[in-house]
Structures are given as C-alpha cells and as structure tokens.
Amino acid sequence: MKNWRLIEDPPQSGPFNMAVDFQLLEQFKPGKTPIFRLYSWQRPTLSLGRNEKIDEGINLDSCRKQRIPLIRRMTGGKAVLHHSDLTYAIIGELGDL
Figure 1 (tube, rainbow, N blue to C red):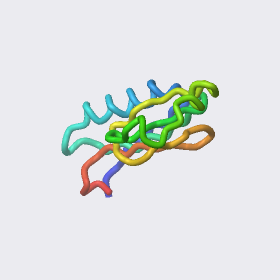
Figure 2: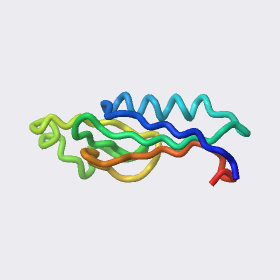
Figure 3: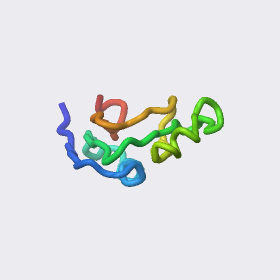
C-alpha cells in the first residue's frame, strides 16, 4: 500500500480552494505520492460543475441577494452549495485508489 500526502486546510474562500486543487493537479506527476486534501469554506459558496450552464437552474438573483459567490469546479457534476461541509480532493493515479 502506498503512502499518501494528507493536506488539512483551514476554511478558505471558494476561489482559493479551487486554485489550490488546480495547482495540486497541475503539479502532480505519475509515480509521485498521491494527495488527499481536506478543506472547508469561509462562507457559503455555490460551485458549478465544469460543463454546467449557469443560466440553467441557477437562481442568480437569489445568489446576489444572499451574497453567495459562484465558482467553477474543474470537475463535472451539478451545482453544490458549500457551507459547513467538509470537502475533499483526491489527486493521484487510478492504481493508487
């Protein structure tokens, strides 16, 4: 079994969290130590999947009124409202799982 690198980050902004995930993925090389990152959010944030259309099913007026920022994930899927959740990122090769 391979050792993993564990990253436990304090609550951060949505853009910061997405930038860290992106940077970790960009720097990862095959054969290197896989990464398991745990993080949370400073404030409620709506993250949209990579291919999700912002004008389909997202109430932008409500987000503006509640001051909920929108960010785009590099992964797919539907919108997720992050608030008090614990989020994780796994960066590695399929064989590491």
